[in-house]
Length: 387
Image: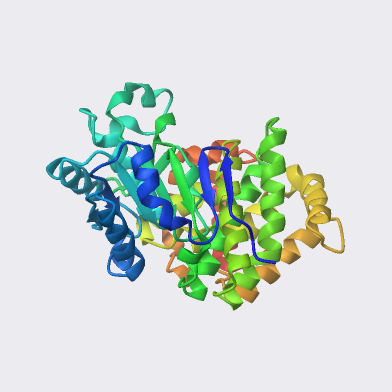
């Protein structure tokens, strides 16, 4: 039976189901948008789904322009150009339309559209978000076209500081999109290798949130269910991209991962951020490569916990080893590289990457202290393919 349409109000207003994109003009009106800027990536900008969204709004009297000067790992200059386009066009809201890069960039453009301080003044450190003028944050509609980052339900955007070669997290509570249109039909054309990489990103979010220390049973429950959905539906989505049930369940799992990681992330992300900054690697694929090595490094603190997760998701054996074997088998089935060398990471970069990982905000959520020495240990294992 096909997945039904549903409206949810957690963690924000979500309209889920096939053909929900047809409601875009209605959502724009609800938020008072008369001249929205649709922010997407260059690959999507020329596709019929974007043209159809703009035309649908136009037919409803909602003049919609598009902006697509965004890199796969968005940089500060992309945000500056987007804000300039927003201002020049007299826009009154943002439709963030696409994968993680477009969603992150769209949210940050909406955030910066009414600020007077420079972008990096709002990095997710201490209470820097409080520097912002909340009245200057434009309303946001998020339309995900991949099932990975879950940025559609997040309050932050990851932007590359090119000068320092560091990925920085820009955060504000009001960056949470007001409405999400989660339509699985928009993900049908995603190639298998991107479906796999983005799906493994969703898995990394669920796993790191579940393993993060601290008492947050709600996040734990959401994360565990996300892992279970991914185990069942990610291989199906990769094998048959037209399977709307698989696509729909993966969209849900991606949103669940990003909801759960309010609890914390960990070593996978602490390492993938600097690797992505220096090597411009795909974030989801980088997390997928790192996943077993970080799990193995954290084993002393998460063994029982992951054993229970193995049971919950239906593995035959309720043990850490069974779960790790499942991760390794899933990576192989999806064609994920086994070693960091396959992403172009060089051994001479280990010290630099380890220092950057220690400074990354995600490191604080790792179950085992993740300083530079710990990061080096994981990097060497991942370069050598040693689990």
